[in-house]
Length: 161
Image (cartoon, rainbow, N blue to C red; front, side):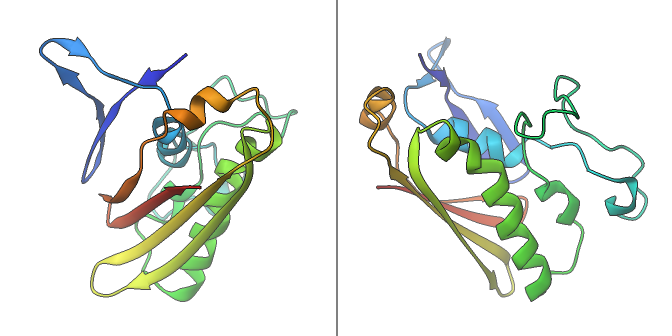
């Protein structure tokens, strides 16, 4: 099974089309990027950025099942000053958004590093290590390496090991 391959722009993504055909990503890259850049529902209204009234999130996420959430809370910090506290929150939000990979035994571990990069903004370096499960080996055989991409003033480096 594969996902639609995403082409990333500065402010979002779109499916990739070649000669009129929708291209696919048989690995994990699109799933990781969807996990990071789909807006998860804000847990409480007090966490919303100034001027924001929508809690966002996917309607199918059930509040009573905490482990069944889609997306990340990275959207909450997109208008904040890039200071060390915000970099730490970005790291935590990315870790939370990707923990499903370890829980579902697709990955053995997910490591996120976050650092400030002047004058650009924030850089997230994400390393996803293959686990011992053979069930998802087809995903690992088709992983695409991304050296770096820029999404909304955030530089993302994905490394699959």
